[in-house]
Amino acid sequence: MPDTIITVSGSNEQRHNPELAVVRIGVGFEGSKRDSVLAATRAAHESLTGSLESLRDEDHGPVRVWHSEDIRVWGQRPWSQDGTRLPVEFHSAVFVDAEFDDFEALSEWIDVVAVREGIAVDGITWSLAAETDAVVRAEARRAAVADAVRKAEEYAAALGLDEISPVSIADAGLLDDTGSGGGAPAPRAMALMATSAPTPGGMELRPAAIVVEAVVHARFVATRASTGPSAPTEAPPAGATSSAR
Image (tube, rainbow, N blue to C red; front, side, top):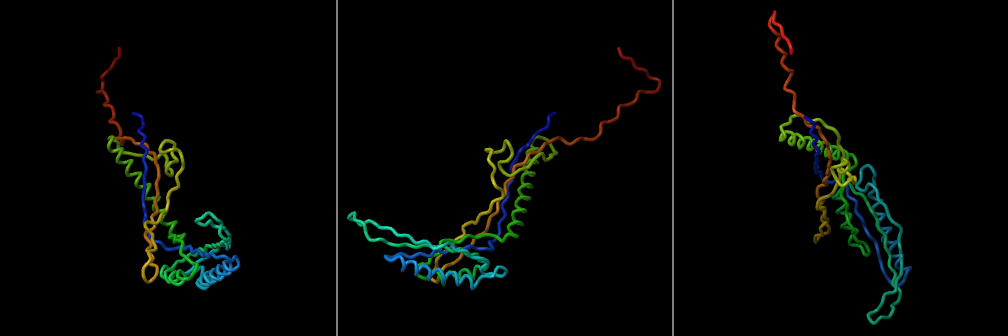
């Protein structure tokens, strides 16, 4: 009987509370004088980054690290409703990113800076610490492989076969006949419904669980277990002869 090949996919999701938050703050002004717009932007930017630097501690937080873009200033002449060009308006923009490991401290900091003129919260990205992320991803991979093995065993049992042996295993899409041919990264991580909801007293942070998903494709050979050694052939009685014609 030829070998039976079983090809399956296995998947798993691991959930973990976020441990880090990267907040993105935008600073911007507009006005008719370039120097005034630039001066206001610099003042707000220096105040913002100064507050972050006072909280920065790479080992203990609450701010692990922060980064700022360069200030950009540009001018444009808008059109009026009657089709004439209006005087030049100048605009500025600069974004600052800061990584917090204390969400209560982040909320308090946002409450202070978000009410300042020219400053707005552009978004928050939630994530896991590197060490936790590695552990969670490894567990997702192991569980995805176990899921693939269970599926292969179920298929084999349905065929009356009771032994499976692994032939190959790969990230999703990397086996030659189990996908479209393009590789897909596995596992992947995402945050479910991580929001920052405004409240009358400021901003309420609602970080949802980080979901790490792993998907694998695996191939097995399925066989029927041996029933044991064959019974020995019975020896002829003493003195008996046999002939073949």
